[in-house]
Length: 314
Image (cartoon, rainbow, N blue to C red; front, side):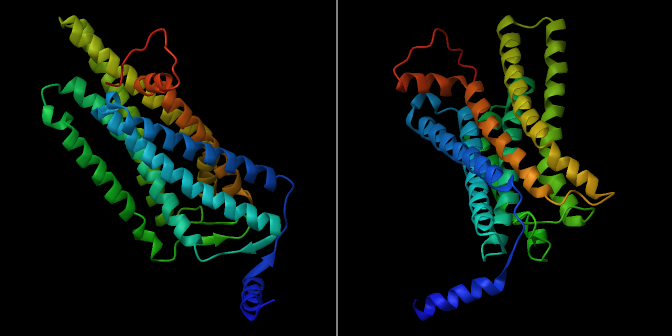
């Protein structure tokens, strides 16, 4: 063995300690790797279809593409975390590598980017129905600008706690995260990247429901009402995506709430991230199911002809 290898091995031993491995660690690690790999594959597949198919070159599909890019980033960073955790579990060690904080940073960034990408879709649908004459707000240039703003803010907001050592390595869960509890970094993160986009999306849906029902009571041209109902249906589908994230992300939210009053379970991050990874896979599948032009393009490439395809996203 070379002297360099000896030094590296010695350094690793000094920086790591033996850990207790529960029987469910390895299966859960493998499940998370499978789910995050599926997310990355689906996101890349959807993006390639959107880019290559000219029928998908529309503003709504640009917003869908933004969700795919954010989902791909989210999936890649979660996959990296899963591989790191599995490696440590297989070696039965507790070891914080040099990229642990970097992975934590990108987890918070990608979470916000993905949640706000869904919110942007809802806002666009709301503007189309409630403010149909404001063509500038519906233009590709304006929507691209809003996407850029969410990405810039998404990359900047974690700096409020990253550089004050708020992120620490959790030995039991083999991950770098902000410790759960009533601290400013935790409340700030939960509010920005989870609570605000989720609640705003649901609020837009209920506002749109009331507006469309009001249109039905007034004398409204049939084509205008039909279009409004179609956009309402798309926002409803967006709310379903949010619901999947909320329902399967409930364990993480529950542990966060528990941490305000008592100590959460020892392996709270492991359990929470299993559900988060599974939910992200389900969301990507649902995104494909709800996006008719994407399905139509896929069937076209597979040389299949659907019986009926309603272009609700164009």
